[in-house]
Structures are given as C-alpha cells and as structure tokens.
Length: 235
Image (tube, rainbow, N blue to C red; front, side, top):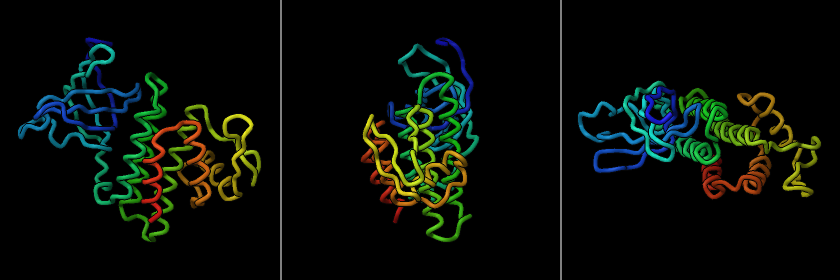
C-alpha cells in the first residue's frame, strides 16, 4: 500500500497542530484509522479550509506511506458536515465520546467497515436530536442517551463481548462466574437495542449504570469521560 494514492470515505476523529500552518488529522475509514498530515491547512488561501472538521464525513485522497508514518493528504471534500451538532453542546460532547471510543476500539483492516458505519449512524442520530425534530426536552434527552448507548452495545457486539441477558429480570455475566443484576426495564432496553438499534425504548437509569460497569470491566476504556458525558446528557 505504501507509495499508492488512496481514495476513501472517512470520518474526522481528531485534529491536532503539526506546525504553525499544518494539521495532523486522524480519520476513521472502512479500512481502519488513517493518520494524515495536512500541510498548509491553516493558511488563508488553503484549499482545505472548510473542507474538514470534527464529525465531518469526507471523501479524502491521500498518499500512503509506510506503516506507522503519517500519510499525506492530497484532497478532501466534505460529504456530510453535521452542522446541527455545533448548536447543541450536549450532542457535541456525546459525539466526542463516541469518536474517542471508535479511535481506541476499532481495528485495522476490512473489519473496520462495520465501525465506520456504526459511528456514522450514531452521529447522524445525534444530529436528529439537535435539529429541533423532537420538541419535548425529556424526549430529546432520551434520544441522545439512546444513541450513545446503542453505539456502546453495538461496539461490544463487534468486539465479541456483547452481554447475554439471562432472564427478563435476571443478570448477565461479568468476567467468568460473577453476575451483574439487571432490572426488567434494563433487560428490555438492551434486547431492544440489538433488535432495532434505531428505535430503542426510553433509556432506564439502571441500564446506564449496568452498561457502564460492564464496559469498564470488559473494555476499560474512557470510563471517566463516559461518566462526565452521561451526567451531562441527563441534565
């Protein structure tokens, strides 16, 4: 792959400075995470101005270098800007948490296509919450929480760690013989997410807790960030 020019659809995960006028941008593509250097990105007449930002889905063309090196971004055009997130700090915080999970958990290779689709769908659902399509504050809150938790549960499924609910009001396994109690409402929510991730029922607070404990024990990823984001989304 090194030495080739690659064209791909990509979601912007993170942006950091590389020099006074250049950026390092990490992208989630269907083939894995692609780190690129964007030379001259901050210059007033740069062709990249306005073409990428956090949460954007873009079409990128980059020159591939050896593994472990920064690839050189040649072209970039925005396909989905998701501007609705800019006016809703709660959804924006949730989007940041989901990008963090994707950047830490998604694999390299063809298996990443499922992660790319999962993140794209979750960001679109957060945009729906921010676009004024749901008027009642409680309904907006539930929609945001459902979008985040659907992503969490689906990512566990992709990792091969999906919780198995043993009974309607039973428990699911946590590291071997230990069992984590699950209320009937939480059990129904978890099952509904797997059955229809775009239309889950309202999120019970018990489900927030039990999935957080399960995530922390099995994945151990961004637990403090999750705690802060979930607290914000409940306000």
